Amino acid sequence: MSTQRRSFTVTQEPRGEQYRALLGEALRHCDRFSLVQRSECIIDEAAKKVLVELSPHLREERTVSEWPGTKLLGGTATLREYELSEASAAILGRVAEGLYDWCQPARPEDLVLWRASDGPWLVTIAHERDAYFEVTAAERDELFRAIPALSSVIEAG
Image (cartoon, rainbow, N blue to C red):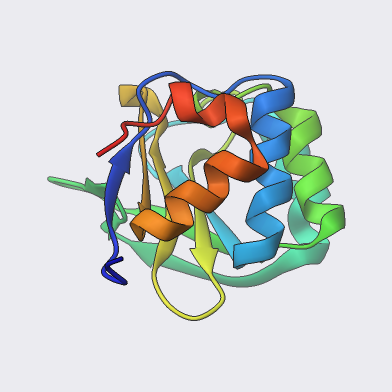
């Protein structure tokens, strides 16, 4: 079986328990996650509370014009990278019900779960209701074994 990673499209948004199970599985593969705040868009009080709640887990903050799945044609955004731990995953699971809830103004945007080694494991482009995994076929199959319901919402490839 190939060890080369490829994109597997999420065809239906994981929500509720499926979303929280996905975050739990991410703890096995990822050590960090990122969220973006676009400069030209305002955020509301709920998003500000999320940023405050996540602040103890903040590892890095930088100004960017692109991140996985997105390249801005103009302007910039603040990308915040956080440690992925049981505590931070619990926050992600509590403040959103699904992958596409990570959209301004109610929350920071575009949750990306990053591998401990290199590269993204899961990329979301929330305002486009788009997401994909960057995994090997074996990793995809492992994900399906861990969360069987995901096999119906991720392109089989």
